Length: 193
Image: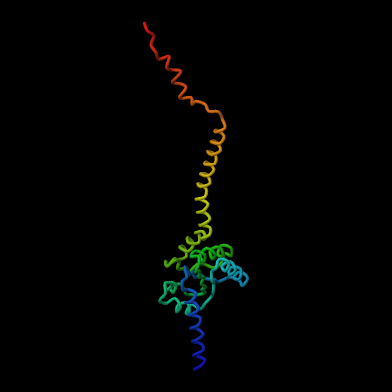
């Protein structure tokens, strides 16, 4: 009986580990990792770690138990055959983005399904999610887009200030519009007959 109990406790520990990883996760993506070599898998793991994504291979039955009753429960439907899960707590698009890059580079593996910010996506949906830039890229693009008009505005103000400084040193001249009516006034007078 103690061997059965020990096996159950070991399985429950793995289920609890998966649950802990999924708690507060923004996304979880399941892939079919078949065909990858150890070297390829290690390279992919490093890419995922660099983006703060946890990638692990678990038994499907244990993953099904772990997602039961959670926002990730829909993943149970795709947990057949070789499955690995990538989980991110910081960047919702990171697992799909990094895995998509690895799938393209290695020409192996495929998406099974994933939950991103509470919504289930199939393989095609995950490919679309993968095209969304990272949070840092989006912030950089946003800052660049708002910085450009501000920079132009500052340059314009600077040019106006420089022009006024140059104009203040120049002698004052009457504007052309004011001078023209004075000259035209005598021509309008009618001669007395």
